[in-house]
Length: 327
Ligand code: ATP
Ligand code: LTN
Image: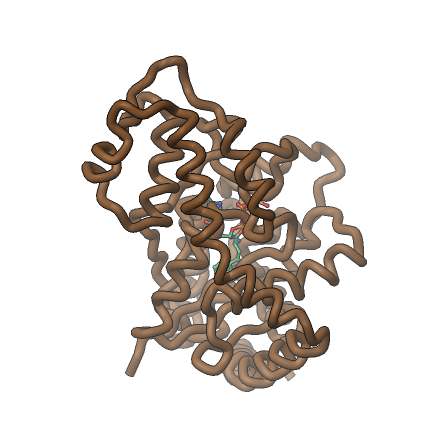
């Protein structure tokens, strides 16, 4: 029996090479050895304000990009969270078992709520309960996420353990799995901050659908330093980040990469880097174009994914309802 994997991505902003190298590329490689469920988490997206038209389009765009990157909807279940109602329902049930104190310790809520002050929604506070429902509905064992989501996966595990201790064995206990390469790609304009969909700057991230000219222009403007040597030196975050991107896209080793650019200037290096990334993204962009040529194709794949996810989720939900004594 293969282990069950579940992971999710929010349909907000533009998907960038940080999401790709830190999460998506890793999910694609996990399809070999695991039994996978991947979810476009639209209910999580609305914990902060969203424009309805943009959200509707982004759900399809993210699903298309996941497939273009290599998520195979035959082998993996790929679906939209709101298409399977059990997610909202289990989130409510878990709400009644998760202590307030656990939720108040979540660092993502603390960081995100500072920006929004009193306008912050109850949904944003409750985000981890919905994420726990996502994970627990599928008897998930492994949750591949970036470092930033580790605390949420641990809360899901604690909630499952607490429920099991009250009602007996009900949930499988999940574990986070954090990749060691590409786990943290930094912003091009500010290499001390993680590359993020919600950062406003036009020169912050390379998006998966950027044109070759945009990619060249963004790398040309990327922040470096006043030194000359092209070396993996963590004390020089700009050049370190650019080298990491080159390395993860090309697969060339660190030493070989440093030797290749020995004596060369930053300008030449950035030009070469842009070409590596353009070539690396080309097959993905071509597949995306093919997939979206028929506007109904993604919708029918997602409907099929939800049809496969629903019985799995409903079986777990029924088990929980019965334990609690509902209905
Ligand atoms: P936001 O800025 O809206 O929080 P995000 O860019 O962090 O968005 P998410 O949808 O929260 O993206 O994350 C999708 C996946 O990509 C997660 O597994 C996350 O850990 C990973 N990820 C996000 N940013 C990076 C990054 N800069 N480097 C590596 N992995 C990342
Ligand atoms: N919070 C995650 C997205 C997410 C998720 C999940 C990840 C929602 N539900 C379940 C793993 C498992 C994020 O922001 N990356």
